[in-house]
Length: 207
Image (tube, rainbow, N blue to C red; front, top):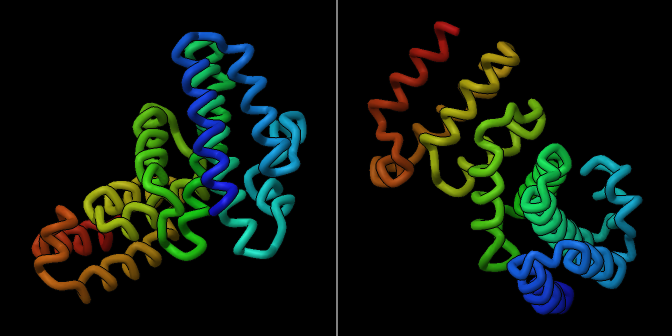
């Protein structure tokens, strides 16, 4: 949590520079933050997949999880800076990596590490809404929506996955079984009342 607190101060500086459109200096600040907090330089980050980056961050969850969160936020900021600088393709690649890392940090014990954890993930998902996400990442997004009680969105992602991987329907049935164990109040709060759950089951069976 000390690292997360340090990150907040560094992000304030990065965001200040981003808003001033001083992109080169903002990117330097991101690189400096990565080295200070994580001991990783930007060249290594760019060359590694999210899974490889998690391996580099260690196996001790008490350190690896906050480091994963920190790296995800730094990549999100860089993605936004690259987009503002007109580097759209690079921005999308960074956003995808950021999204996976931030969800991974949450999936570790299904809790947010800081108040902006949820908003960061939701912001990335909104920005990537027009792009086809990798199948593995879609599964994590579905778990994120289900775990945060947005069952209607989880269902939407479920059918996106089934369209790509028909065999995922079995996991989809497990999703609906978990929903059927919830109260009517919880289902309504998740925008997927029980009658719509039953409709979803019937729809899935026809896929």
